[in-house]
Length: 219
Length: 227
Image (cartoon, rainbow over all chains, first blue to last red; front, top):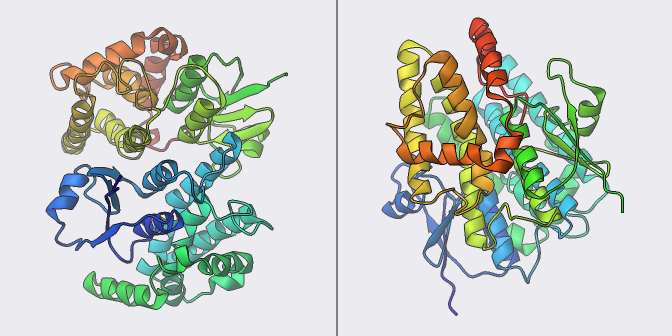
C-alpha cells in the first residue's frame, strides 16, 4: 500500500525539525514542502485552519497538527521501527512531562534572549540556562533522555540545538560553559544521521535570526 | 497486590476534576489529598518540584504531574472505559483538541467572563471564535468522544461547568444556548453523566468562591496554580 506523506514546514523551525527527525528515525519517505510564512499556501490554510501554522504532517490526505502530537502519531503509525516513546506507562508519562516542559519553556525563553537587551536580556539568559540545567539534571548519566536509545524527549529538545549558536551570539554567552553534559548529549545525537540530516547549520539559523532582527527593528 | 493511588489536588479546580473523572471512569480507588494553594505543602513541592502545581497523581509512590499527562497515564494503566480513541489518527485529533482547549480556550474564556467594558467586548469576540471551532468539531455527536465521554470532553470540563458558574456571578454571556446551541446541550449532557456529576464540586461552592473573587479584582488575572 502506498503511503503518501507530506510535511508542510519552514526550514528554521525547531518544531518542524522534530517531524523531520521522527520521520527519518522511522525511515519514512515523505515530500517536504517549504512554506513562505509571509504568504501561506492554500494547502496550509486548508490543512491547519485553526492555527494556520507549520509543521503539518499530511498522511494520505489527512492532516496532523502540533509538532509533539505529530511525533506521537508518527511513533504510533510506524511502530515497528525505532520506538520513540517507552512502552512502560510511567516512563511514557515522564517522557510526555519533559517534552511538555521543553515546549512550555524553551521557545519563549530562547526568543527573549535574542529579542531583548540589557537587564531584560540578562534575566532571560539566566532563566534560559536554568531551564537547560534542569533538563541536564534530568538527563543525568544516561546517553539519551530515552535511556539507552534516542527517544521522544530527545526529539523534542535536540532541534533547539540549531538555534544555540544564534542564542549564544546574540546573548553573548556560552551554553557549553554552563551545561557541558547537555552539549555532550547534543554531540551524541548529532552523530545520528536522522538528526544531522534534519537539522540546518546553526550558522544559517543565525543569519536568519539576524534578518529577523533587522526586519523587526530589534537591535 | 496492594496498589496505592493518591491524588494531590484542589476540589475547586477543573484540572483536578479532570483527573478525578478519569479515575472514576476506570473504577480506581484513591486517596484524595486537598492542597491549600496559598500555602503549598512539602508533599506537593516534593512531588512536583518543577511546576509546584496540582493535580499530582501518586501511583505506588511515583508522581505524575500535568493533567493531560496524567489522563494519558490513567488510560494506559487501568482497564475500563477508554479515555483516548484506539486509532492513531483519532488519537491525534483528540490530543489536538485537548491541547487547543488548554492552550487557547481556558484563558480566553476566563478573560471573557471576568473583564469589563471594551476589554470584555474584545475578549468575548475572541471567545466566540474559539467556541465556534469547538461547536463545529462537536458536529452532531453527543460528546466529543462520540457516544461516550472521552479525552476532549474531560479536558473541556471548565467549559461545561465552571464557565456557567462564573457567568452566574458576573452576568457575562459567553456560552449561552442562543449563541452555541450544540455546545450548550453538550455541556448539559456532560455534567449530567453520573460519573461526572459525582466528581464536580458543588455549584454553590464555586459561585461562593467566585463571588469572593469579584470583590478582589487583582486576583482576577488568569494565573492557574493548577494544571
